[in-house]
Image (tube, rainbow, N blue to C red; front, side):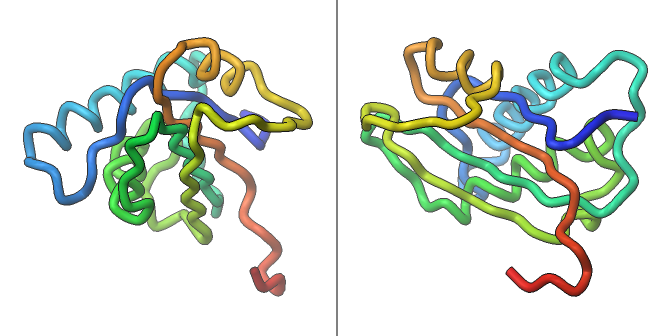
Length: 135
């Protein structure tokens, strides 16, 4: 069984939920390919309740954070989790890639994104918070 948290990155600019269907499909295929490449061989999709953090490191071209989330969630179905109804919490973040950051515990996936020299999306999957815990 895969241990959480688990993360990966996708190069490029995310497609908005409002983008053309062709653009959304291309982006979803890119997300799916990155997730598949990072997902441990032989592991089945998660079946438990989970939460997702999506951070778009942009280069002075931010988009509406809520519009980038759904295509990414949909692309991860049947790869990382069985269905996006397993998501109890969704966190979207926009960060300027040119800003200075102090990072504690940078993951290899984050590091790969930063050294790619372009915009990227970092996606982290975690266990869902305890049922009685409010955000």
